Length: 302
Image (cartoon, rainbow, N blue to C red):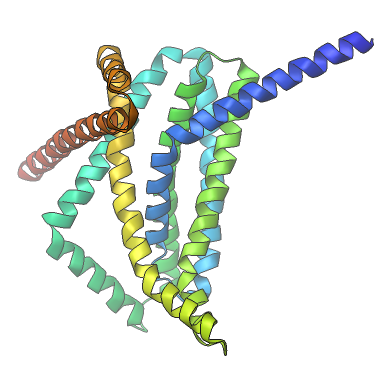
């Protein structure tokens, strides 16, 4: 009896160790999507009244949990009955990430006037007393949850690729663990980011000179943090998306890995990242071009 119990405990410890290792690997692979998820969701609540920021973040967080509750069983079903579909789904997710990155760059540099007009229109609507702010808030939440579904699908797909071939219980544990960690992590950080200005204002009004200086520093840094998150999120799209595409083609993936190992050190790592980013940028530009072309063709037919 004692030996059987020890064997059982040893098996449980082995499974937990496997889950821990695979969860760490999956977390590293999905870190790029996490950065993008964080930046996008922080931007989604921009313009919401200060007292409504946390309720809005919580509403989107609940929607994210619902998204994960749909996606995790779907991923397990695919991994169990359609394992050959994992790589194509990863490739689609990687291409979509690259497309999103290219679309952001195009909006930034080619459609800047349209972006500025949208921002001005939003600010004017928020200041207009006749505008239904509650309806606008609901629309923001719905849009954020839709965005979260896409990004969550990418996170779950990448995680599924990491645990492919593992026992079902390990797959389930890692997928659920990543879903919880990513959701709590993202929306906890988003809540902190959107309240940075309030924290800075609070500290700047304290009696202590040190607190006032810290508060002014936070107020000055908050806008730059949002910009930095946006830039990091866009870069992560190309790095992660390009990395998925590179490793989705075994010959190319092995060639890049062998070259990075042969080069070694920082140059090998940076070179590998450069290849991933380059592939992501090219793939994103191609997909964006196709989408724009199809959109124009549809417009002409209409």
